[in-house]
Image (cartoon, rainbow, N blue to C red):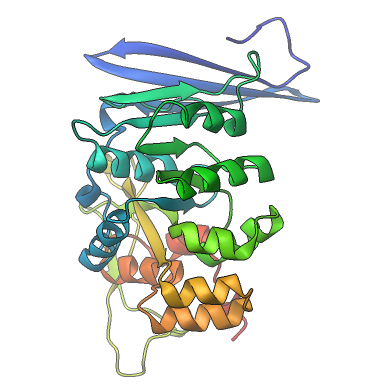
Length: 326
């Protein structure tokens, strides 16, 4: 809860309400400023919280790659991206896909976002000194098959997550990095031994959420020279782009709904060897690109070419700086 008399300290609170037959969670966060408190309210519809894997919007190739990765009986799969990029939704979809009778799934979250059926979920608590690292220690004594750790924030949590993976568990977690390849550097920074985490990583998913163009009012246009350069289109390549307009259906926004753009990096034997010997980022990137890795920026451009979102919307969440300087 939040203390309405306290205006000098940051606070967090939550409340659940049943509205029109749907369970809605409201998450409030306040922050003191010289002009008064600043509030942000997140609204979560529990009914929309669990999405099947084939409804996440992945391409057929991406979905097949992810399903292959999930066949590994042990190891760590990471989802990465900034706050609000849909990491938790993706991991919940994966857990829902793996959920079956006889499978013991246990989670540590900060806090639990949505209740999952047949899943033992726990919110970490500073009050009882239950954090991610000692929570994993406790979970490993509960005979889990699959463990979800809300976030890897420090060396201790990373080490315990790796220990769980090395002892026969599937482990899923998140990192706050900008890309799949950037997660490798982040794990280095956390002090994890290269060959240990490399050999136990199943893969890394990096993602962003972009707004979907309203299908009723989006307007077609031909890309100009600057847009063609950003998209690296060939001289003879003809595409139609769309821009937002606004209509009553989308409340004048030009956008309605959201979709995820993703890059999926699978740790195969070659990549494991490269990371274990601490190869440079360029060498790792070149290897990944030669082995069917599709970067986030290219997945975003694919969505633009499909007419699902606008180029400006992808530029809002993905770094195009290298292309603007070309």
